[in-house]
Image (cartoon, rainbow, N blue to C red; front, side, top):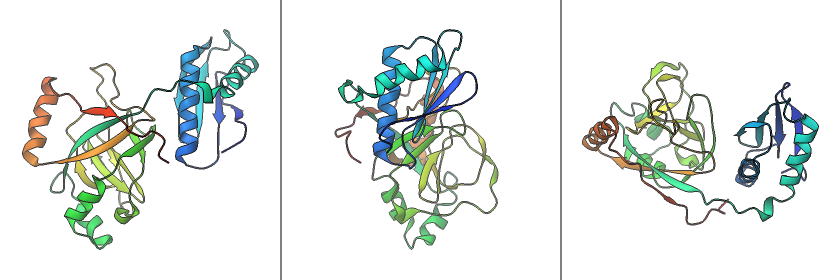
Length: 247
């Protein structure tokens, strides 16, 4: 982590605030705190704050505030981060049907790691995964915290079409395809929950800084939940994380 943030120009309407040069929960927590501080302060001219692994992209109106003024104001917030009252992160439960047509690559992941399919499911659904950032497609979560025991390489030949909700593994990362798209991750399961819904507000289910917990479900449960999602009656389970300071 840098002792002091670096401020980089990103065109004539945005700046990047960089807080470190590695992926770590400590740096990411600092990123989320700064994003919250900027949004809470309501800085003049700021239209959007986008948190990533180790930096923030801040879009602003140069007619409302100059870059120099903006940097000065953000530095003030940066110096007061330890005093900010931060919201506690949430844990969002993602019901997931593993294997079969939902997760055609789970057998490979198991064989690659010398495990059974049941062991892969147990390991994958055991922990809570930090949402470092959203990107790639609308609502796609970049997650941290997956066990290296189920790590697996990307596909040599990516798929042209992957169903929305597919849960995949690529190296030491796991993630959820938020919309139907091409992709090269090993697919181990699928959730009927919609991570992105343009007909609903908010459009995006997940938020950077929160956590995900995967809950194994049966094929029957998958279709039951899918029906409820389509009818608009399904409520995603979430709860306050008991200890938000785990690194």
